[in-house]
Image: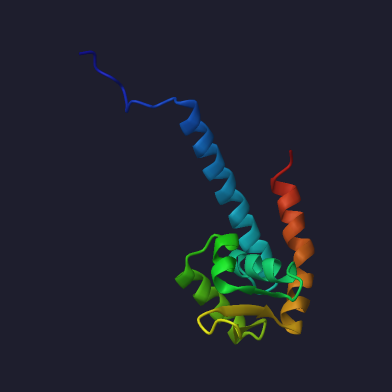
Length: 130
């Protein structure tokens, strides 16, 4: 068996594509974290506010919200807890189903979201040029 100078590299195009996606995600996420930090928000906090702001009543059931922002129920609960401590979101029990909880965007939350929105979009434009 011939000796090799280094590890065997799998040049599978799917693996290369996957690694490119991971690199792009990490780069954009780091840029967003830095920029949104100036507004006192992280990427997950902004994504929650963004989704709530897009809802007709500025609220969303927690279970549905976790699917949209791609967080586990426990991670979402921690994010919403932080937003709640800052007065940006409130949690409200569902009147029809007491097991359901809604996250609701407050006026202060909408104000912070609207201040951070141009920054978010600017970072996306800078990092995701087609």
